[in-house]
Image 1 (tube, rainbow, N blue to C red):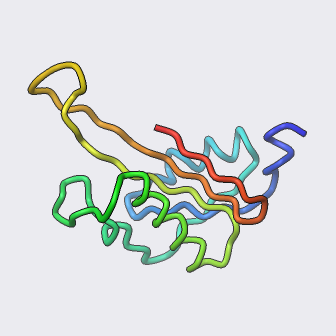
Image 2 (image 1 turned 60 degrees about the horizontal axis):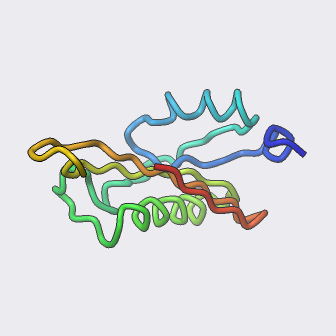
Image 3 (image 1 turned 90 degrees about the horizontal axis):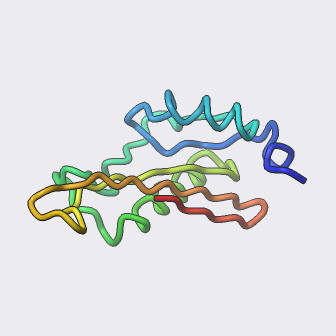
Length: 117
């Protein structure tokens, strides 16, 4: 079974309030056949902001996972995607910051978890 067959015509919730669905949804639909919904009035900033106006509790990965789990809980769906962004000092070049975005995928139906930097 290929990835397209595994997820074809399944519905996933994208835990975002910053219109990431404009970029992510077309890719997931085209490549995996997944339809994306976004929870209405879902405030992802409560999990922390990359500007640190709201402090993140735990790691970047933990925050993305919490977003995905909360989106599943709110919508009663079984597939979720969430991301968490940070700006951190570059590991090799002093005085320069780099952007890192973590994407988490949860499938409570098949027990799959996936993370990508």
